[in-house]
Length: 156
Image 1 (cartoon, one colour):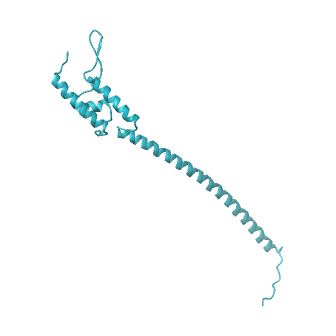
Image 2 (image 1 turned 45 degrees about the horizontal axis):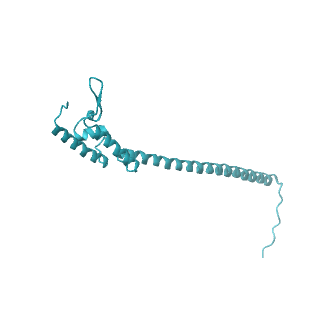
Image 3 (image 1 turned 180 degrees about the horizontal axis):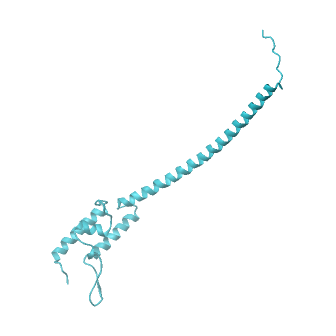
């Protein structure tokens, strides 16, 4: 026995179908997802009608709007399989994953460049130190008088 009239059920189904089209079209309310809970909220009802019910004797009967829930789930899956993302948050997650991959590759490239520059700096410092030692050695020889001066030729 139904607790609602056929007219009420018809209005509810019309509201659910309108909400379904809106959600599957990507028009989500703030904080909403492309799911049954948001579908029921947009249609102005609860989601209890989407699920099967049990009689007192344990037998199961379908929910009043279970066929709409199944249609919604099927259509959403088809859209996702076709590459059309109906939930902007899913698109944002994909974009952030892509951005993270780009950032990881940029960081790896920077780490590689930093390693090369560190190696170059170490080599440059060791060469400067060797040149400094050579200059100090030559200055020491000049001060000790161990070098002889070359004669100056006359310039014409």
